[in-house]
Amino acid sequence: PIIESVSAKTYYVIVASFQTETQLNKYLANADLSTLKNMGVVKNNERVRVYADKTNNRSDAEAYIDFLRENGKYKDAWLFIGR
Image (cartoon, rainbow, N blue to C red):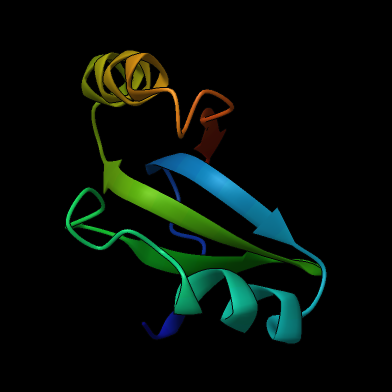
């Protein structure tokens, strides 16, 4: 995926965060694309983050986080708010 800049007032459901693009590429090589159909990568400062989805609605983002956490593989999913 293309690394994009953070968009204001966007809610990102983050499933992974890295300091380098090398770490990111290793993660992406093994990513489960069947689960993460809307996956993308966003860069903020010195971090690159993999998101499972992004939305303009906080409730939708939080509901999706709950769904991913139940999956078990993404139990550490968290909400990143673009500002």
